[in-house]
Image (tube, rainbow, N blue to C red; front, top):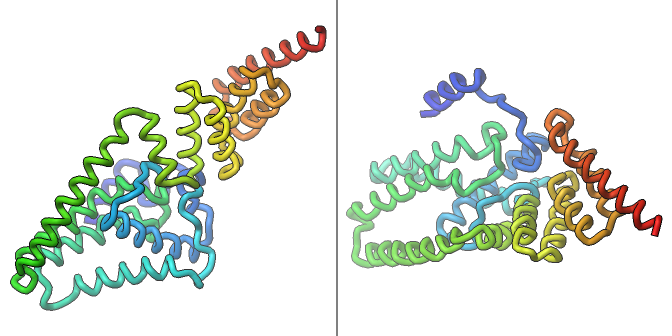
Length: 289
């Protein structure tokens, strides 16, 4: 499966590993030493497992800086992830294990091997969508457990059935956040309060709904988390401009220009330049009065 994956990747991109540069905002692991990447990736592997067995406070975004980089070996998070990984590998190689359970665990491990950041940094440090394929392996293993003679007791079957009902109810409740963008982006803040992107998109949603003060606060928080988040500076510029806080608007828009990469900024800079002209005119009008 891995051979097929890397073959398709080479066919699509012309290389096996190196693709377009991954922004630090999406995956902080692209900019950390090898040891820190491995420790953090092990914790993320364990965190996925926790999210699967108890899927509460989910989020569609875990970008910078929701997942803290583990900078030291003296940290229980990466040890927990390592224990989960070793446990799955141990069960996979058990001689008397049900073949269906072994196949399911294989699916789980191979699925996460592609997105774990253990082999090489990918486009995101973590995303719940990356668990869609591996979780099929756990479901398959559960099915194998239900068919096993040693675990097919009535109590075991009752426990599994209860979990299915519970998780079904939780899935239904989770689906409610997709009713509109405000609920969806609010759920990002609940599930990933330290994500710069989550704070920005929620701020943008609040601004569109006229909640300007709250939008300003979340935009400011996104900048506090990730100081080079230029979109948040643009959002602040609009707020300051509407409230005639011209010096602050000028500062925010100039900050956005200085951050945004030159190769992508032609269209944005033309908009910003016209905004700066408007700000300067308003400032001159205030001075003349």
